[in-house]
Length: 269
Ligand SMILES: *[C@@H]1O[C@H](CO)[C@@H](O)[C@H](O)[C@H]1NC(C)=O
Ligand SMILES: *[C@@H]1O[C@H](CO)[C@@H](O)[C@H](O)[C@H]1NC(C)=O
Image (cartoon, rainbow, N blue to C red):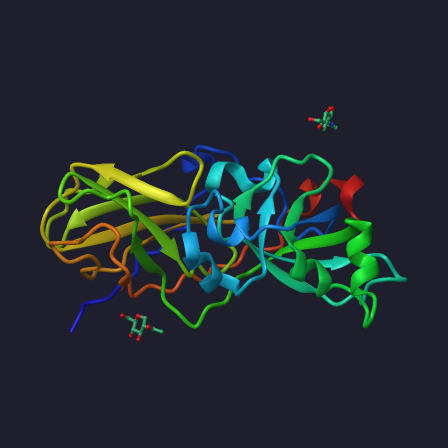
């Protein structure tokens, strides 16, 4: 049976977070929403989850503007959006998960066409789609999965010299800001780097043997080191393997609502 423990270190953000914690997560922001016709956000999003993106929130994934995408740190973040057009929209919240980046500077998110249509009042879907772009409000929310944080070995990996991984089912309202890997039983941690603004973390010359991971996760202004003491990858991890590897760790930290002073008041509803 696997030994399993976490070490939580509450750390002041200024002392260890290299990039400042961005935006007040609890704010409701006003923005606009557009849709795209292709399935690009699901299959080929910049986060590079590939077809696994659909496991995060079914088809309701989104491409986010660079300020929310944050060079890949914003991959997997969950938001709820609702449309503000009283004639066309139902005002119910729709959850979306970021899997892609967009550069259109008129909106904060782009979603697949059918996600856009879910915002409409009955029989108003076609009329809403004709508008192409609508006013919305949105809020970052915490992600809930009935799953542990899970590792997928990326197709770009080349055993044994180069290991690249993605993490699926990142719960809570968190950012993964550091990932280390070590051989189980050894404490020679080596760090992975986030690759090309995606959700892929990689390392050249990774340790050998059974591998374990350690994470630094931030949530609002808090940082945590999460260290499931468990073998996650087997010694002969393979590239392009369809299998997923359970870290035994559920991330569920939620940002405290302690940052309302830093909200952009112009964006408040
Ligand atoms: C938005 O993008 C367009 C086209 O790239 C550019 O001309 C415009 O200045 C941009 N607007 C803002 C507010 O950045
Ligand atoms: C998550 O990991 C824990 C600890 O290893 C395990 O007991 C639990 O069954 C896992 N949960 C799921 C949903 O796989």
